[in-house]
Image (cartoon, rainbow over all chains, first blue to last red; front, side):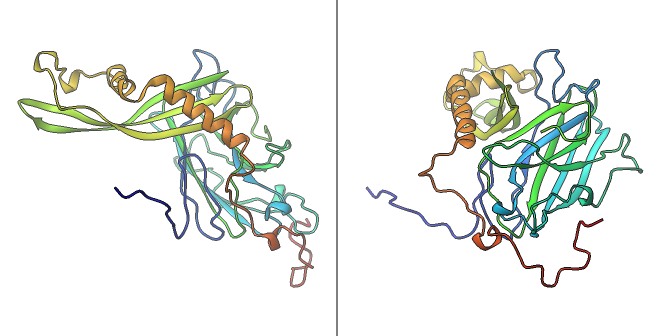
Length: 183
Length: 129
């Protein structure tokens, strides 16, 4: 009987839980089903008083990790509630200053702010770098609005990158009463 | 504390199998784990093939009467509920503390060496508002 001794894969590999470095390509979509609920407690799903869902991605955000003057594009598509009162569909270009590693927080360019049209309430995405380190590195994070309903909801997230991304920490989600930095 | 959530993503079945109609054959499912201490999450997404080789017609549940709980129980009978929850929890822990002798992706070293000399950068430099 023959046994497989080794295998070689040309190209990029994606796992169910994380992405591997693929330098200049787009990543696979990562799917977040953010409606896990713990009884009647406020959760990522139950949004009463906490209308913002904050997502911490595993993407490191420093020069040392290759982000300095090497913009990434973060793309997010998703919805919340059965009738998708909250709908998310945006791309943001994220970057750090190659001189001093400062985050271009005020200049994160987002193609759709979520205002207008049928997007009521607006998605109002907010993209930021975590204040704390996770696995020794600051991580790319974002917040989008959610609805006070314990029902269905998904986010699909992927990156377009030119620097090389690492996935050496977990994803995380949490609700907040504030749109601004949680992680 | 770890929270787990099982979700059925999809089902496939046989319109007719022997004398039975609409017999479930494959269940696609998702298992989510959340560490409530730091809100880290992780997913296990796969499918389970059900044993349809020896179905007792007297104990057959009509497709439209199947419940989420019943189908999940069939999945657990095959894969083991606790075994899968242990596995997804272990994967989450491994992601947060990757082994040093495990192959992992690196960024491009020349892009992480800091910094370009600024040649060709617009003036004022980006971000200088």
